[in-house]
Amino acid sequence: MEKWAIRLSTYDITYDTRTAIKSQVLADFVANFSPGQMTDDDRKFQQVLSRVDVKPWMLYTDGASNVNGIGLGLVLKSLQGDMVAQSICCNFKAINNEAEYETLIMGLIIAKDMKIKNIDVNCDSLLIVNRVKGSYESKDPKMVAYLDITKGLTNHFDNFSIQQVLREKNVQADALAGLGAVFKNLDLNNIPVVHIVKPSMERLVLGSEIMALEQRDDDISEDADN
Image 1 (tube, rainbow, N blue to C red):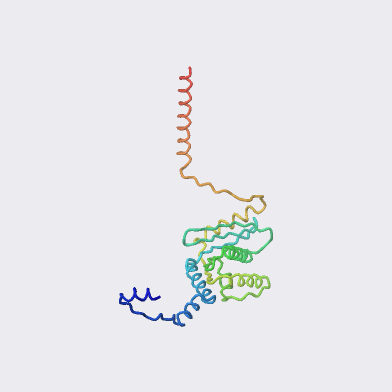
Image 2: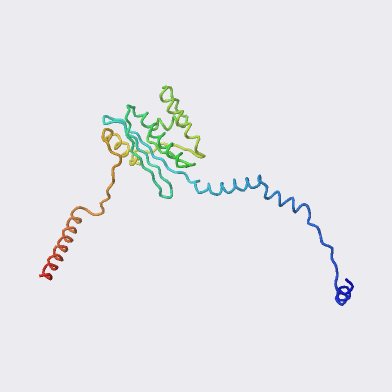
């Protein structure tokens, strides 16, 4: 110790006392990382993620009840270009208003299963739209039951709206509903949709030219072998 004291005496050394960490700093640290605070942070994070779904999906519905049968057609679209289309056959009898309700209910179920939170429904039945909005009252017990089911499904969405749309702006859902009614008695799981880019005249001529070229290549190959 004496040797160290002699050696250190040659230096100009000053001593400062070590300051203690303020208790408020520790308190703030604990508060910022407490489980309750983490829950709030998680909630804010979920709110940020949910902003992607602020823009509503568009649901177009139509029901067909005619001599061919009962068919339901619905088209669910997002503003990003995603689309779900369904043509549904009903193996039971229903009047037109019942078919409209059935289509609306099926569309809301599909949207709920897809975790969609904001939806804007377009239906060409003014009666159904006004009943869902509450403008018209339903007195028939069956219609009241349909309305109750519809109201229950709308509670699963953060934002729900419904309005009437002109039939000419609902042609896709209308076509799918008619398709479901026509193919009621046929055992079809799916119906492929084929897209033809060019008319038959151009496709057949092009096909003939390709066949002619292949035939000429075969003849050349045979001559070379001989």
